Every structure is written in structure tokens, then in C-alpha cells.
Length: 559
Image (cartoon, rainbow, N blue to C red; front, side, top):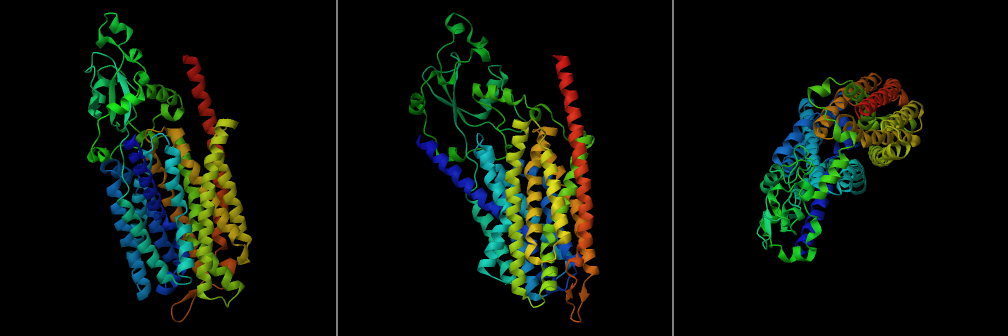
């Protein structure tokens, strides 16, 4: 029991570390809080500023598949330390360029890419560690780093406004130091700890009075020898187990061969009392506590308890465990391209506002009150980034709970949450096209964050249900490539529109005095994209409904 308590405390500490690491990984979404001042200082156009922001998004979204493979093969901890270095290397040059008032756009794009890549690596490692440490509470365990990632922009923008109000240079220093040290110190506490389990073995295969510690290989040997064959998941790891003698089964006492006993003859795990197990357990060393394969996948590959066989068998009845579509089969599947298009359209709409809400703030306030100070504008930018972040967090929670309600209570598809996201985005675009008073700009940032959260809160579950949970990591990696494409289109178009209304001063400073007209045309385009996304979503729901009905009819016919 003492060991269990020690391991439990260690897992809690590791989960706290994973949450803090995730808090440093979503800082790409805080870009709009400092981008306008950075662009003014370096005399960049809005298009060039958007290119820098897009490079960060590229680092975050384009490397999902290779980073997932890296974490699976090398374990979570190397990804955290590499991510920490990339975050530091990314943000410190921004601070230096701002202080010097000069810098190459190409180099700034490279450093921005580093921040996105570093955040992606550290975040993937923190989520995987949480899932491995709490295999029976994965949803709750991973919810903390996921929520921290969504609140990252809120955390840094509020910290910057409180600690360094109106100081862009100090805020960039905060980003550089905060992201590096949060991930670097979290590295030392982020560990995967083993899980011990106990089960009885049939007589004839053990020493009658000896309790022995079995390794993963022993468990594999027993499974392949036919004693029991749990349903296995690809890429799963075997936990450390302890076995103890059990009462001989009737076949054995009746003269039957012990070797002929199959899974149905396996006694219940409680054939020996828990107290006997604890008393007989050998005290493991400290090395044994930390001795676990960190390169395992998110789910345990093998089960050491007969009861797990029944659990996994019932889980396998779910479609996400029955189908396995990945690789070339994924690319030839029409549902993949439907979801890819929906993700690209809706995520691109959200990213345009996320990356440019700072420019919206500047344009509206300078038109509304030309006496506003730079410090005031910075605080307003940070406020709207915070609103976006909180909206995204709330959207993720609502879509998670809402999608479960749709499936379990209403019996509807989770994809209806995408309809909600499309509608929320539509309202946000309409608000952006009509808000001229900057005091009401929170409608745009809040609704955009809410829609973005709804989108990303439910989409991984839709991908798992549609193509199977076995290949979820790589399938999700392919799916997140779509915002890279659409984000570039929408953000660059916004930059072109804003630049076309900007006036260049004699010292190279750029300003747009037209208020809403500075960016209005960009939101007309995204409003049209919202309508397209809504139609695509309704078509996908209809297509999936017909396809599932055909599957059920085939199953009934076979039965």
C-alpha cells in the first residue's frame, strides 16, 4: 500500500507538470496581442505580419504526424526538452528584433515556426504522459493539459497586462522566459510510472507458495501459449504485473491436465485475498518504480487481468474499435475529404480572427478616438486575446459534453456540433461586419473563440468514430494539415485588404484611418466560407447517416 501511495503521488506530480507544460504550448494564439506593435516597430506590412503569424501556425499544425511518431518511438521526455529549446530559441530573437527595430522577415518566420513546433512537441508529450499515467481515467487526466493549452493565451495576455502594461518588449521577454522555463522545469517532473496488477494463475504453472514478478515478455508468452488471449490494441505496452497461486480448477483436481485449461478455466482474480497479496509482494527498488517503457502508445497493449478481456470485448462493439482506416485507404475515403474540407474552412475562419484581432482593435480605436495611446491599445489587444482564449476553452467543454449528449441521449451524430460551430462562426462574421464601436468588439473575439473551441473540442472524436481509434494519432495529424492551407489563404487575404487601406508615413510607419473598412472585405469572404462550411457539414451528416444505415443492414443480413 505504501508503494501504491507513492506511485499515486508521483503520478499526480507528473500530471501537474504536464498541465504547466501545456500552459506554455498555446502561445501562438497570443500573437495578436503583440503583432501590431512589432509590425510598427519593424515597419512591416500587415501581410508580412500575417506571414510571421502563419509560420507559427505552420509549426503547430504541419508536423503532427512526425511528432506523434517521434513521441511514440523516443518517449515523451525528449520531446519536452526539444520543445523547450525551440520555444526559447523562437521567442528570444523576437525580443531582440523589437529592441533593435530591425529584422529579416524570413528569419522572423523561421523563429515563429520554431515556437509553433516547440509548442506542438511539448504539448504532445504532456498529453501522452497524462494518458499513460492514468489508463483508467484518461478523459479526466488529459482534460487538464488540453484545458491548459486552450487557456495559454489567456494566461500570458493577462500576466503581461498585469505585470508589464503597455510594454511590448517586456511582454516578449515574458513569452521567451515563461515558455522556456515552464517546459524546462516541467521536464524534470514529467515521468511515466508503471501500473501493478494482480491475477491468479492456474496450478501447475507456478511454485505453490511463491509469488513471482512477471515481465512484459512473460505476459506475452502466456498469451501466445493459449492460456488467455485478450483483445490487443496496436502499439500498447504491458504493465508490470504480479501473479499469485490460485485454487486448482476442477479439471485439475479431477485428474485433468493443467496445461489444457483455457481462458474459461482461469479462476477469478480474488481467489487470494488482497491482504495476502500485499503481504507477499516483494518490495521493488526505486529503479523498478521508474522502469517503464515510455515509448508505448497511449493505450495499454495488453491486459494482465481476465476482467479486462471482457471490458475490451464490450468496447470493441463500438464502431471506433471495429474500423481501422488509415494510410492510403484514408486518402481514398470520401468522408476524409469531407471532414478535411470542413476542418480547413472553419479552422481557417477562426485563425484569421485569432491572428488579426489586434489589427481590428487598432483600426476601430484609431477611428473611434484618435487620441488613444499605444499603451491603451496594447491593453485592449491583450484583453481581446484573453476573451478569445476563454471562449475557446468554453467551446471545447461545451462541445465535449454536448457531443456525448447528442450520441447517448438524442441518438444523433456528433457532427451536429460542427453545425453549431458553423453557425457561431457565421454570427461572429456578421458581428465583425457591423461593429464600428470598439467597445462591442468583444462580440467578434468571444464568438470566434467559442466557435473555434466547438470545432476542436469535438473533431478528434469524430475522426476516431469515422476512421477508428487505432490510427487516430496519424489520422488526426493528417486532418490538422487542412488549417495550414486555409489559414494561409484567409490570413494573407486579410493582410492584402488591410494594406490596401493603409497609409505609409514619411518615416515608414503604416496606419489605417478607415476603421471597419480597413478589413471589412476579408470578413465578407469568411462569411461566404461559413455558408460553404455549413453546407459541407450538413452534406457530411447526411452521407454518414446513409452509410451507417447500409452498414447496419449488412450486419443484420449477415446475422
